Length: 500
Image (cartoon, rainbow, N blue to C red; front, side):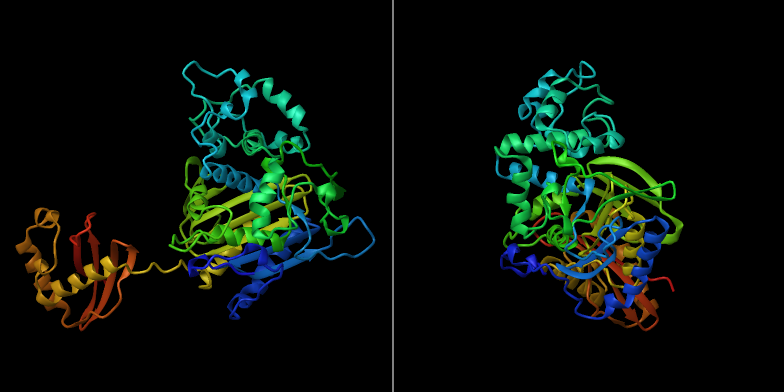
């Protein structure tokens, strides 16, 4: 399985083969045993009867492991594999968000639309205050609709019929907060998004997702109706209770499927994760998936603030982690991993997590056949292991032509000992006298001696970069930043000796 959007040509997702592709080098395998140990320990300590995990890197399914049996309640030993189906609960929300954005991209709705425009039953809802705005489609996506957090209740609405859901909506809602003012996680809100998908598309939500998103990606073993799945392909979910396992009943699909109803396999889900990761970096390549790459990137914009937390000590030096909600996806900023996109799933009989690092092109997921056990900590620990082993570096930013020119002017200024050998923006002389800058540059050159200025610049963006030069008596570090105009003018031109 492979997806390389940046390479240029469009790719037929349906051609993906449901197999695990080994990494091109042995490096991933070098740490595989350590990752296995993380999950084996979690499986034992959390009493998980069956689990799978997978790592996707640059469009390839580079690591996969299955642990346990399909159903511990039967005498037959049936080991799970990459084609075993698991329910992934709230990880389903990303598919709902993708469907809404696809309908938006097709001009069939707007995120600023009042939700009542597409769900007429909402007209009966009384606003919490006289100055409260209408709930918008975007509010539902971001969990800012003012609805109460409903994880204990929402999971048990999975099999609600569409008719019963219509009656529920028409019956009104007591608000927890004023719409648009605060984040509060709402399964009900995502069920409403499912109704919007159905009403706007003119077909059942589940059919729209399968036909417009899943099947174009080759996700032929993924869907919502678990009772229609071949029994021998399903991982059976259990609860650990009073020192033993208790079989969780299978809930059929219903009106709340948009918040948590997806059932999928590791081989299928790797295709979804590869597609999401293909949206980075932005490129001129033809679109090759069911949703625009720019819309995928929109899903991870940090819109609704969630409470931050202190990073667990087992992951490295302590630091505060900030996080927010985009559209069906959580985004957090880790002091080692950088930006990470993630979502957990918890459901009777199942728990799951997905986490990916857009800038590194790598992600990992895990499905577990035990009630509410996501093992998000294990996946995050594995990502830190991969990062620390040098296997998940951020992708290098290409040096733009404009930045290369700016760096060339910086070299000229150094060689001539004169900042004005570069095209300086108007702020430079106003911020510090040019004569003083020239004197400081001369003093620095005398201090460090001859320098090798052939080192490449390290881009921060297409307009800014840093560099380091090895000199006779130390190292010079510098920075150039273009002014925000088409002509190449430098608003920052900085040289200084790097501390030893």
